[in-house]
Amino acid sequence: MSELLGGGKRLFLKREDLCGIGLGGNKIRKLEYLLAEALAQGCDCVVTGGGSQSNQTVAAAACANRAGLETHLIVPASTGTVTRGIAELLGTVLHEVDSSNDLQKGIRAVSAELRRQGRLPYIIPPGASTTLGVLGYVDAMRELYDQVEDLRLHVDHVVCCGGTGNTYAGVVLGTKLYSPSTTAIVVSIGRRFCHKSTLCGMVRKAEALMGCRSDVTEDDMHIHFCGGKGLGVPSPKGKTAMQYMAAKEGIFLDPVHTGKAFAGLLDLNQDGAFRDGEVIVFIHTEGTATLFNSFV
Image (tube, rainbow, N blue to C red):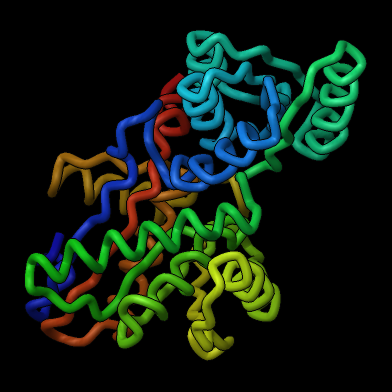
């Protein structure tokens, strides 16, 4: 893939898909913090939900099992059979709603019922998008820049997938703290993305928890759109990027998250965003269930 980029550029992948719990992915880093809070609060179960293409639901169930917490998942009727099967294998209690628009309502209703039963549920919002989630990706960036230092490399650009913006807020903050000369880029997989002011707000809240100040501003945020027809919908560019990665490296991307994000990286390269000889790191945030659902 480095040869495909041309100009002596070097491409590295940060393999978050291989992090060791469930199917891996970026949500694992966020759940480490969220489930620690659940245990500290004495909760005995987790309630969360996600859209039909969500990776967070399966990740939450796998991590909650490790923490000894029962998981209740709210999913739309359109959720794929692979995701459902994996959730059931994990012993998750599934609650179906009509569509993704009903997720929050379903989460509230299930949580209320569990409280009536004397349970103490911990609510994780869709995408695990909280300030604690941002901290998970500050950790990831510290790990990344330690790894490249051991390899005696300097990263010129780090590129990640963007849905809610929560992961990217952590990437920007962690990059500013641990490798301030690196450019942090997000590829939006939807037709819209968080405003930079909203991302700065996420960063400020994470800084408050960390007790630090990074001086991140909107100028540190670089957003590229490659969402095709919108969030959760595959795109021709994304499918081409998936085929490139599978054919060249034997590594799988998925059609609605990492495939579209990597297509955005290829766009950026074609547009001259990367100079000859530069080092680019793509964060592989996973999407195995989504990939398998696309074949069913």
